[in-house]
Each structure stands twice: as structure tokens, then as C-alpha cells.
Length: 360
Picture 1 (spheres, one colour):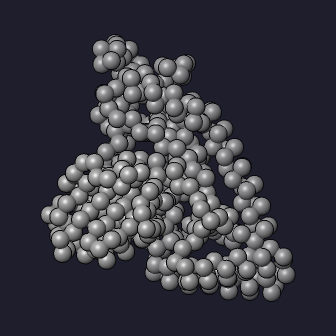
Picture 2 (cartoon, rainbow, N blue to C red):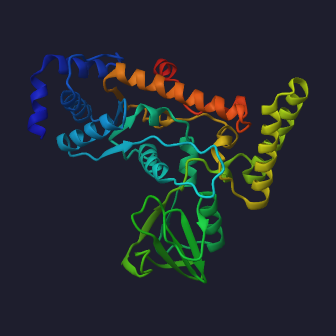
């Protein structure tokens, strides 16, 4: 496919585009391109500039198509950053499947292992954990090294893992004597670690259905199981519970002044969540407290490398998709505020595309 990309070298406008990018004379627009030509141009820019590139699309259909095209046109890995659904209502179980994919892509971007990323504008703008927090939540295990098993269990809990009798799915871990099993979302299969004292004596992947080891490995990276991790709040779980209590005090004071039914319902929500957090150490609808857990607002744009190129594919449709997403989110937040499930000052769950572009 490189011979196909080489034809771009004979296009004067493409050479001018590269010169403008290298000189920092952006933003710059290229018009009159069909979808396949957009992928062709994005691939050419990424290959010729040798800089990481993020391609922003209007929806999942466009993102999937250009991901396939880029994979065919280049010999570089192409990662796709999807969007996710926030959890604002209490639920016994919550699926983090899309968050697992997002975390893997964000981790690769933070580590400089993502030369080509395709993202929907919705997924790109959504609030997430800051890059330094994600880096701190990830850790590796290596054969022959010494580890405190209890400390490892604590780190897994902090990263959102749930302790169980037998590991069957991502985000679970189990301990039996000197054996630690865990299933990291960044791995295709769970890992079994056997310790001799504090030394990691053997390690291998196993089949969760049969629980039989299949292959030995020497190192493994462990990533968090969700984007919203209450244990990583300033001061940990106790600090978060205290912040929720202080928020309840603020809401109670406001309720005395205005006597709104939403305030009374919100006080009950805050009191219930603080109690659940203190007693059980977990929170089903942790997204309600994203601003307390991560006071610093962050989205995928914060994971861009300093020399990264952001390519907006069909910018009018991307802008319209961003506008529609913000409108839908505002409608959802309004309903949550009226039902006493959110505090108004904490209701920022995505970046504004226009402001973000101006900042960049």
C-alpha cells in the first residue's frame, strides 16, 4: 500500500499541507474529499509526518469505516476510541465493556504506543480520568521479582477489581494461599501467579472455563477496570465520603433557603451514597461524583502527545454531532437534577468542542 500512498507525493496540495503542518500553520482545511479519500489523506499525513495522529469522526459508522481503511493503507496499528454510557442510577451490576476498550486506547496514547487513533467526537469529549491518574492505576508484574501479596490485593481493589472465589471474567481476582488469579481488561485471558514467599515464582494465562493453565508468561501489565475509580479520589474512600457529606451540608443549606423538592431528594441521595461508601467500600453510580473523584477535568484531548496531529474528518458533521451530544447530555442532566440524583455544580461530563478547538 506504500506505493499507493507514494502517489500523494506528486500532488502539490498534499506537499503544501505537510509544509503547513510542519510549520505549525494550523488549522488548515482540505475540501472536496470523498470518505475513502479522507482515509487516504489521513494515512498519507500519518506516514509522511511520522507523528501520532488522531482522526475525529462524527459517529461509530464513520469511525469503523475509516479504521478499516487506515488499517489497509498503513502497516501501523490503528486503535479505535469508542464512547461510553455514564452510570447515574444505582444498579446491582454495571457493564464496563466499553470502558475497558477506552482505557486500553487511552493507556496506549499515554505511553506513546498509539501512532493512529480513530475516535468518535462523543468519545473524544467525554470526561475521563486524567493521564497521570491512569498511569498511577496501571502496574506490571514480572517473574522473579518480589511482591507483597496483600499489597497487590489492595492495588487491585484500588484499580476497581472485585474479589471473588473463582475468576471468570474481566475485573475479578481471587487469592488461594500463595496463588493470585486476576483478569485484567487489557488481557485476553486471566493470569495465575504463584508465589514462593514474596517471590513471583511462576506466572501464566489460564482458561476461565476449565481453570487450567495454558501458557507461561514472564510479564503482564494490569490496567484498571473502570474510568471512574472511587479509591483514587483525594483522600481515598474516606476522603470521598467526607466530600459527599460536605456536599450534603451545602445542599441542606440551600434547601433551607429555597425549599425545593429536588434538594430534599438530593440530600437523601448524598446521605445514602456516603453511607454505602463507608460501609461497603463501593459505589454503583460512581459517575455521579466524577468531579469529586477527579477534581481536574480531563478528556481524551489531554492524552494527545505534544507533537500529535488532530484530523477532523468531515468537520461540519463532527461539529453537528458534538452539538447534538451536548444537547442530549444536557437533557439527561436536567432530568437527573430534577430527580435529586445530581448536584448542579458537578454536572460537567464532557468538553465543549468549540472551546476545545480554540484551546488547541
